[in-house]
Amino acid sequence: MEQQQEHIDSLLERYLSLLDEYTRLRQDLSKLQSSVYQNIARANFAGERGMRYGQDYYDERMRATRVLRIDEAGGDEAVPRFMVRNLMASSSGAADDEEGAKEVEKSESTPERGDAKGTTTAQSNSGTTPETNQTAEGRNQDGEEQEKEKPEMKKTSSDPLRWYGLLAPLPLRTAQTLSIQAVEQVIPRLASVNAEMEHVEIEIRRARKKRAKAAAVADKEALGMEAVEAR
Amino acid sequence: MSSQADYKDREFLAVIGDEDSVTGLLLAGIGHITTGAEAKKNFLVVDNKTETAAIESAFDSFTERKDIGIVLINQHIADRIRHRVDSYTAAFPTVLEIPSKDHPYDPEKDSVLRRVRRLFGE
Image (cartoon, rainbow over all chains, first blue to last red; front, top):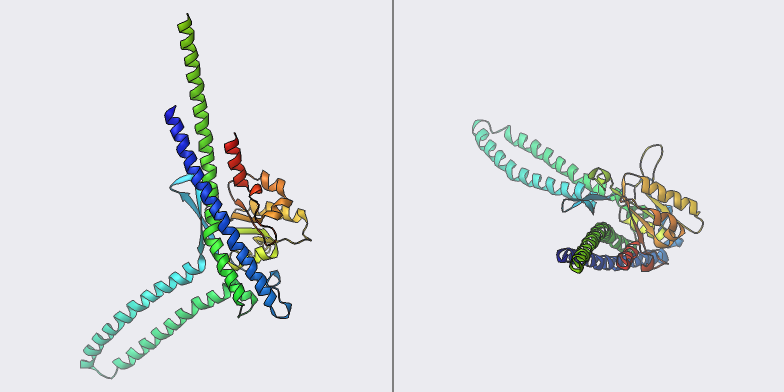
């Protein structure tokens, strides 16, 4: 009995800490969203010729750049964990890093090879090597430029701010930053805490039922003992 | 009971809200319109003229889609289809009610807090 009570107490403790986190996340979300609305209102107020930053300018070919990833929290299938990841960061940012690393490798390794070639070929034939080196460098530079251009083009075309022109007003940019914070940090955590709370609720109900059954059995046993004693 | 297959393809957040709520969230990059003959949006802008049936139909469509993991809905709009929102019990997608510009969040209507009350009121 005592063990069961302890189990219920520990579940309730976990539940209350989740409830505390849920309440805090709700407050954070309310604050962030009211700041988003204020900033959109500011942008609309300052908009030229009554321009309204709203649905009239949505891109009809928009693609999500922030998407969900749902997995199991702590390997428990019943408790999903929500996360939001930025596709632009993974496709261009990470790619940038990788390309950057490759470029560094290239730039570090090519001169050595060039030098080695240069010295060996210089001994045999000095006329041909500088040309081949130049063309190889030229190709390398072209490649680097292309690699640099690609992610930038991707970034500019998929940023929702671009729906409102190249120079989106500062309040709209601030609204975007705040909204990203809500979408990346608060909303997925709220969904995860909600799912975990649901799971703990089920466990608490189960534990309470078990305790009630055990109590009923104990009562019966006590009654039985009393009856025996009375005889 | 949910299994991994239930949620591995759910990568979008959907939103039903007033214009500023939807614009704010789309600015964060969650908006998605599918290609093909039947372009499906993952958002609905609701104004005074939007009929309740249209909100209901968007809610049903978002909650039936297999590529949506979270449905965000302004609390005052959820009030217009309260019976639908309250009777929705599936694990996926998760429905989260959010505040709007003109309607601050009312914890009395919060589904989680109502569950908490039920748990402790038993």
